Each structure stands twice: as structure tokens, then as C-alpha cells.
Length: 249
Image (cartoon, rainbow, N blue to C red; front, side, top):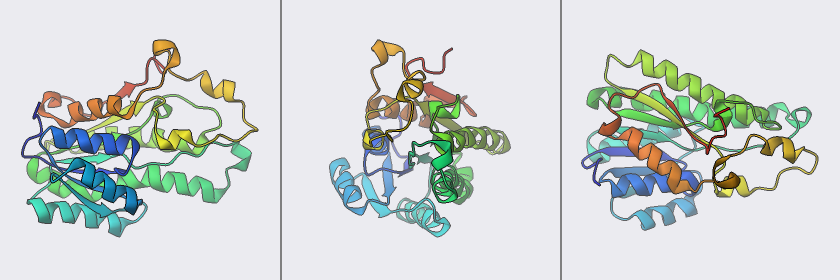
């Protein structure tokens, strides 16, 4: 399938995990991708794996100037911008009493603030080409997840921002959607949780599909590619759950 032939996409968080899977999938669908991540070494490897369709640029989504720069790089290289996939994010499990202001601000600034900065930088160019945005939210953006307060708040914010922008820019033809994954086998989820949390309570909100088996990044990339394509041309403001039934009840 070449649903994105001739399109130009920016993908954040593309050095590993879901971001890398999304960048690879969009390139296979025919898009030219400009990939960004703070991990310079991983980003270089990702660009090599994707091939000539990819251009890489070190990106910090917590920085307005960095977000502006990667958007301008895409427009300068390829003459415009059609798709933005906001995948960059961080996870921070912990008891609420242990989540100090620094930890809280870091998660909100990257997970929600990064989406805001990228959308704001890209929107004038997306209006020009009636492009679209796919934001990476989470099942934690639809329901609560214990011991994950900052992350859950940030992802609820991403869902809300997605819906707000979908309405505001609908007359300009810009679609804005979000994907809400459950557990996915990525390096981010492999970090060891603190010993003093009730892990059984966390797992009550896990996938019910295939006896709780987690998704792989390519499962999420499938959903992103669909929403970014013309097959989803009548879909905007959606928060598409790809969570094995986690949020079904």
C-alpha cells in the first residue's frame, strides 16, 4: 500500500518504540519523513534503517525553538508539510506523594506541552496543504491509571487538545486525531516500577485481549498510518483506543 505517496511527515520520538515503528510505516506507505528525537545516536540508526525517505534532526519537544526548527526543516527540504505525528513521551510511575513539582512539570512539559508546541509550529503549514495531525495519547488518557498521576493527566490533556484543535481547524480542512494505546512492548514500558506501588491495582486496567498480551509498536503504527491517510478523511477529533479492551468497560 502507498497511501501516503508524495506526502511529507514529521514524526517525533522516532529513535525507538512506537515513534520508530510509525516512521518506518509512513515511509513504506510512500511518505518522506523527517524524524526527531533527543536520542541522537538512536535517531541516526533509525534514519539508516528507514533509508533515503528519512531525514533526521535532534529534537527536544520541551523546547519551542526546537519544535519550530524541525517543522522548518521539513518545509525547507520538501516544500511543505502534510502530516505531524506527535509520538514523543515519557512515563513516570510512582506514588502521588513522591511526585514532586519537578517530576510533574517534566512529564506535562514533554507529553502535553510537546504536542502543543509541535501543533502550533506546524499548523500554518498544515492549513496550506489541508494536512493532518496524529497525536499519541494513551488508554491513560481515557481512564485513570493508579500510581501514574502525571502521565495520566498529561494524556487526558492530549485527548482534550486533540478534540479542541479538531473543531477549531475543521473549516481549514485540517484533521486532528489521537491514538490511545494500552500496554505496548517498548523500551519506555520496560523501566522497572517502584517497589512500593500496588502493581496488581495497575494491572487491573490492562488489556483483556489474548489473556492480557501487550501490543507491539507496529500495531500502533497501523492505526497511525490509517488516521494519517485519506482513508480517514472524514475522521477528526477521534481518540482511537488500541488497547485490547482496557477501556471497553
